[in-house]
Image (tube, rainbow over all chains, first blue to last red; front, side, top):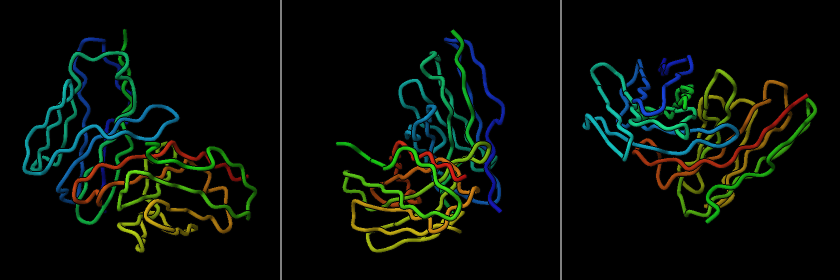
Length: 110
Length: 115
């Protein structure tokens, strides 16, 4: 069955550094991969979409890569700020499935 | 625009009681979704509606029913609540289906406890 893995442990990053989050998937071939941000007590908010034929996508301080050979996406936040602290969810989409990863909690330390 | 709204925000039910969670969107989106989120389990799709008049099962449909009342509204019904249905429920909508890449817009959630 399809499986998505994100860093299960919380990630602590010093302010100003680059935070890198990982999303690995198995047993399916997504045509798209989305990343969402979720703050405590709130619904997820869409951040970025990357297509299978795109290697990299950028939006302001955010960068996403998509390696269909490794079956992996990396999500980078450069020049991180305490306001970037949240849980980040990946959602590889394809094969008629809508599946979200469990998310990685990111803490940016001032 | 309010985006996606959900009612109620909180609910406590006794085992065996029934209730309907309401969801509405004002973005003229075609597709709507119901998810549940449990600690350590992530977001799991219960049901979705690709367009008005259609509904399909997601990953965890047992114990739930849905109604796509019109293009704006998508309700989730628990006929006989069980403690295993204690969760946070999110409604979402997208312009078209996410399987073609469209982003989902989520509501604020309903926190349901079944005792």
